[in-house]
Length: 471
Image (cartoon, rainbow, N blue to C red; front, side):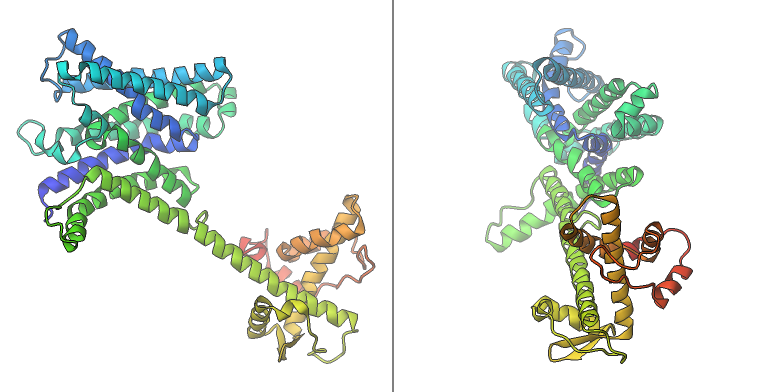
């Protein structure tokens, strides 16, 4: 049963995920996702060093890990470690003349190993909880509340970081957008791209440390990268991408906590394991983020693998249908088209295949061809469409022959690829530029403009619509 404690737990995880999604969006757009992964680990020596320094200087006591002073100490150490990571990566890349990923790998592993060594040497003496730093414990955040209220301290911290990130985003949105998409232009306009880069690293470091107590250093990279990458697959507008990243991150936390409560008992209970009641909220949140990403990867309207496959298949089938119209038209042309409206019935090898028969069946349903028993002929409507295709094909061959030094036998393939995407205004423009040629480079007659094309051209105003150029 969902209780108030579950609400606070899920809300804390959601705030952490949403806070991470803001800088994560720009890391993804800058193709620096691995830098976020590195920061989630390399801030460890920074927060350990900051804790030890504060402990030895007497700023905090041995039991002050949950206090507000300790939070600022850890955040300060994280900022220093994050900036050090970015600086060392650039230095190794520049001085060592290696690629960015190799330099990042050297700095990442070295600083993380240093942090683990410091935890190993000093954790027992200063009571530093390495598990909390590395793996998180979002289910226990409700035990540490603000004063006498029921509000978890972690929720306040992550909420404050989220608000700060959104405020910085609003103030520096122009600078972040310009340095992300065109750093050269930003530099020419007087913006310091390097300073903005280090500012982003500092913001990311603070956000990561705030999220460590909720989702841990190992899992924080999921909410840092997965929601922005998923949003990137769904939209090309930066404002929408940021909003979707926040929505996916926050929603995944609530769904993940619900699944962590209900699915283990349902699954393992049916298998006879009655002692398994729940699972990790942080881990289930990561799984939900991954599942949402997979769905977007497969079914995104613009970049989804399944959608692209279907779109390409439909485009290929449309081209096949138009090829069938062209074959029938050229057959009529070779046999001297008769005066009756149906024309002679012809056989073509391409129409004998399964896809060819399906194409002819669709053309027949649309009224472009008529026939039976494997023989087909153009109707008046089909002939007009075929004339447009052949006219486009031969005009493009003439255009290629005039402007490029290509042999005649190289013109057909290029024209065959282009003819399916030329609309009436573009074909008219080609004809005018070529001074209305009567024959193509091979000596074949170029069909004149049909009545249907004239009507379509008269109805159009402005540039052709996208759906008239391609599927």
